[in-house]
Image 1 (cartoon, rainbow, N blue to C red):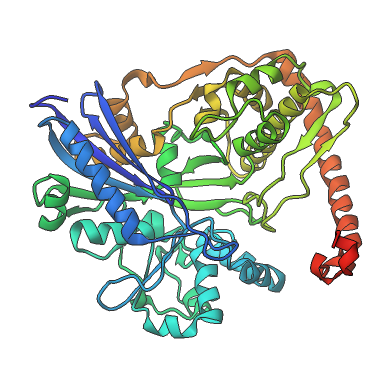
Image 2: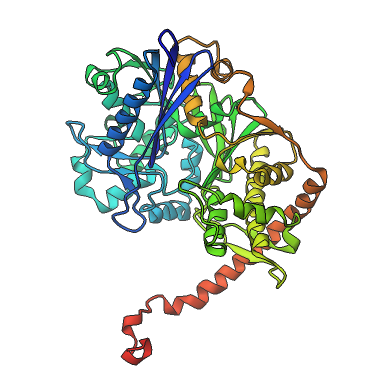
Length: 526
């Protein structure tokens, strides 16, 4: 990008990856820099990051990206981050806790207690955020139970992007999108909920002021020197990664859903006002004051097929950074007929955030026969993941119309994934294998915020003209018919496997305290 060109810088900070992208305002070029920050696990179930490490990685990626724009004018910096993170700060705004990421599950017991007591339903109705260990609400209640002394030393409770905004601008604030994902915010009245704060034991004065997602602050002199930008450069506070992904995939029409599939998956659509379901399944978070994103994330996505490849085909190892499965393994699955010759997989290997109880039934292969090859096993895994996401779409469609779907993410670089997902959805589908959707969404929101685009859709089109990043996916009628029949059988299969899980739990319970070192010496080969 040469002198004279104008660009907008999008900064997307996740728990493990920092992505900084510069987008030319005329849509002709982009440049992306990434930095990896592995999760830390000091205790099983605790998945954290050091805030300073993430900030340092962000500044380094921004500096490189700015240098590579080769003199182009940066009109603004627009921000995005993973939602559901929590950091405690002291009065000097120094972290007293690590960043508890969305993957941190230490508060699982708190979430179970809230569901068991029936409080979860009212909390979800108020906040639009299902009660789950991911939510800051549950994390704060965990701290109150287990770290009361730390709570007294904490002046502020903030999210990941709140802390990043402070480090870039010197101002401690949050915005509507991040606030609406905390479980503490009344999405209907657009204020921190006094009732929820009383339950959690946090005062409103410990939480940052809430700005619109389009609010513009200014880059501090210190941050400007670190990244090579003039002090005073506009900084758009932006939104959370989920809502911005919907914008980046252009899934912001009233009947369009965005489906993203990498290691995990998500499906979301945009409505004009907060919409909360009675089943406590879907989250509802803001993109702007009049654009709210409703949907669910699932913990079992491309990682299921990656697991199948690692377990069933170690001779086809995935490449570094591959969240799904190696192409050679998927080619084995492509040779298998749809329906995997009667083999069905329920892909519930990990915690599934789309279910209100916080976990799905047991993962299972059903109908296994001697003629089934590893190609069958892998194809059944692909089909199981797609059928699961198709079920999420069906439940979402009960809340609001969903007539078309935009696919994005690493998995959809594969023809097999695209074909199976389109057939399961059986509606107009477009697909992109790009991974810059969140950054594009952040850049588009930033462009709109500083007045260089008339609306959100216009901003996406300006930065990504003619939708060149996606293409229609044809739905095979025969394939759609086959999966339609299979979907009708899934509820009964899930019920059956759920009962199997109960039987296995009962059988295992007498041995919960069993330890090999408690056996006689000769029993363990002494």
